Length: 144
Image 1 (cartoon, rainbow, N blue to C red):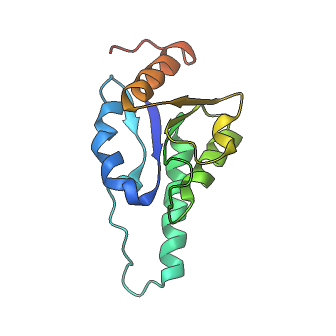
Image 2 (image 1 turned 180 degrees about the horizontal axis):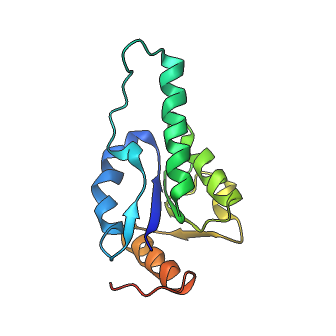
Image 3 (image 1 turned 135 degrees about the horizontal axis):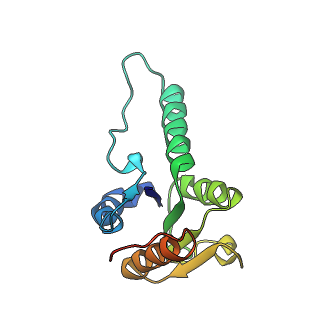
Protein backbone atom coordinates (compact mmCIF):
# COMPACT_ATOMS: atom_id res chain seq x y z
CA UNK A 1 0.00 0.00 0.00
CA UNK A 2 1.36 3.42 -0.96
CA UNK A 3 1.77 6.06 1.75
CA UNK A 4 1.05 9.51 0.29
CA UNK A 5 2.74 12.61 1.67
CA UNK A 6 1.35 16.04 0.79
CA UNK A 7 3.99 18.78 0.95
CA UNK A 8 2.60 22.23 1.69
CA UNK A 9 4.19 25.63 2.05
CA UNK A 10 4.36 29.16 0.74
CA UNK A 11 4.24 29.31 -3.05
CA UNK A 12 7.38 31.45 -2.97
CA UNK A 13 9.24 28.45 -1.51
CA UNK A 14 8.03 26.08 -4.23
CA UNK A 15 11.48 25.39 -5.72
CA UNK A 16 12.98 24.74 -2.27
CA UNK A 17 10.20 22.31 -1.32
CA UNK A 18 10.33 20.54 -4.70
CA UNK A 19 14.08 20.09 -4.24
CA UNK A 20 13.59 18.10 -1.03
CA UNK A 21 10.52 16.14 -2.18
CA UNK A 22 12.65 13.14 -3.17
CA UNK A 23 13.66 12.74 0.47
CA UNK A 24 10.07 11.63 1.14
CA UNK A 25 10.12 9.14 -1.75
CA UNK A 26 13.15 7.15 -0.54
CA UNK A 27 11.36 4.32 1.29
CA UNK A 28 9.43 1.80 -0.77
CA UNK A 29 5.77 2.66 -1.29
CA UNK A 30 6.09 6.35 -0.35
CA UNK A 31 4.79 8.98 -2.77
CA UNK A 32 4.59 12.76 -2.76
CA UNK A 33 1.11 13.70 -3.95
CA UNK A 34 1.70 17.45 -4.28
CA UNK A 35 1.36 18.14 -7.99
CA UNK A 36 1.55 21.91 -7.33
CA UNK A 37 5.30 21.46 -6.94
CA UNK A 38 5.87 20.41 -10.55
CA UNK A 39 2.88 21.59 -12.57
CA UNK A 40 2.78 24.68 -14.75
CA UNK A 41 0.55 27.30 -13.19
CA UNK A 42 -0.77 28.96 -16.30
CA UNK A 43 -4.09 29.63 -17.93
CA UNK A 44 -5.44 27.28 -20.52
CA UNK A 45 -6.73 28.70 -23.81
CA UNK A 46 -9.75 30.94 -23.20
CA UNK A 47 -9.56 30.35 -19.44
CA UNK A 48 -10.21 33.33 -17.16
CA UNK A 49 -8.05 34.05 -14.12
CA UNK A 50 -10.91 32.95 -11.85
CA UNK A 51 -11.39 29.70 -13.77
CA UNK A 52 -7.66 28.95 -13.56
CA UNK A 53 -7.64 29.55 -9.80
CA UNK A 54 -10.67 27.31 -9.38
CA UNK A 55 -9.02 24.57 -11.43
CA UNK A 56 -5.82 24.77 -9.39
CA UNK A 57 -7.72 24.76 -6.09
CA UNK A 58 -9.69 21.68 -7.15
CA UNK A 59 -6.46 19.97 -8.23
CA UNK A 60 -4.90 20.64 -4.83
CA UNK A 61 -8.00 19.37 -3.02
CA UNK A 62 -7.84 16.18 -5.06
CA UNK A 63 -4.17 15.76 -4.13
CA UNK A 64 -4.90 16.36 -0.44
CA UNK A 65 -7.70 13.78 -0.51
CA UNK A 66 -5.06 11.21 -1.52
CA UNK A 67 -2.75 12.18 1.36
CA UNK A 68 -1.98 10.10 4.43
CA UNK A 69 -0.11 12.97 6.11
CA UNK A 70 0.78 16.60 5.52
CA UNK A 71 4.22 18.17 5.84
CA UNK A 72 3.98 21.96 6.11
CA UNK A 73 7.03 24.13 5.46
CA UNK A 74 6.37 27.18 7.64
CA UNK A 75 7.95 30.61 7.70
CA UNK A 76 9.08 32.26 10.91
CA UNK A 77 6.61 34.42 12.80
CA UNK A 78 6.42 37.87 11.22
CA UNK A 79 7.93 36.89 7.86
CA UNK A 80 5.79 38.50 5.18
CA UNK A 81 4.27 35.98 2.79
CA UNK A 82 1.68 36.49 0.09
CA UNK A 83 -1.10 33.92 -0.02
CA UNK A 84 -2.34 31.50 2.55
CA UNK A 85 -3.18 28.27 0.76
CA UNK A 86 -0.92 26.35 3.13
CA UNK A 87 -3.13 27.43 6.05
CA UNK A 88 -6.22 26.05 4.32
CA UNK A 89 -4.31 22.84 3.53
CA UNK A 90 -3.32 22.42 7.18
CA UNK A 91 -6.91 22.95 8.31
CA UNK A 92 -8.19 20.50 5.71
CA UNK A 93 -5.66 17.87 6.83
CA UNK A 94 -6.46 18.49 10.50
CA UNK A 95 -10.21 18.13 9.85
CA UNK A 96 -9.52 14.82 8.09
CA UNK A 97 -7.54 13.62 11.11
CA UNK A 98 -4.28 13.36 9.19
CA UNK A 99 -0.97 13.65 11.01
CA UNK A 100 0.67 17.03 10.35
CA UNK A 101 4.35 17.90 10.55
CA UNK A 102 5.27 21.58 10.70
CA UNK A 103 8.85 22.15 9.53
CA UNK A 104 10.54 25.33 10.68
CA UNK A 105 8.86 28.49 11.86
CA UNK A 106 5.90 29.47 13.96
CA UNK A 107 3.46 31.23 11.67
CA UNK A 108 0.42 31.01 13.92
CA UNK A 109 -1.17 29.41 16.98
CA UNK A 110 -2.53 26.38 15.09
CA UNK A 111 1.00 25.01 14.77
CA UNK A 112 0.69 24.29 18.50
CA UNK A 113 -2.45 22.17 18.50
CA UNK A 114 -1.97 19.42 21.08
CA UNK A 115 -3.06 16.44 19.01
CA UNK A 116 -2.03 15.53 15.48
CA UNK A 117 0.48 18.33 14.92
CA UNK A 118 4.22 17.82 15.42
CA UNK A 119 6.78 20.60 15.07
CA UNK A 120 10.24 19.77 13.80
CA UNK A 121 13.25 21.97 13.10
CA UNK A 122 14.42 20.67 9.73
CA UNK A 123 13.87 18.34 6.80
CA UNK A 124 15.81 15.46 8.39
CA UNK A 125 13.49 15.46 11.40
CA UNK A 126 10.44 15.68 9.12
CA UNK A 127 11.53 12.67 7.06
CA UNK A 128 12.22 10.69 10.25
CA UNK A 129 8.77 11.58 11.61
CA UNK A 130 7.01 10.47 8.42
CA UNK A 131 8.87 7.13 8.64
CA UNK A 132 7.84 6.79 12.28
CA UNK A 133 4.17 7.45 11.55
CA UNK A 134 4.12 5.05 8.63
CA UNK A 135 5.68 2.31 10.72
CA UNK A 136 3.88 2.85 14.01
CA UNK A 137 0.49 4.25 13.06
CA UNK A 138 -0.18 2.27 9.90
CA UNK A 139 1.66 -0.84 11.04
CA UNK A 140 3.63 -1.32 7.85
CA UNK A 141 7.36 -1.73 7.97
CA UNK A 142 9.56 0.83 6.30
CA UNK A 143 13.03 0.17 5.06
CA UNK A 144 15.00 3.33 5.74
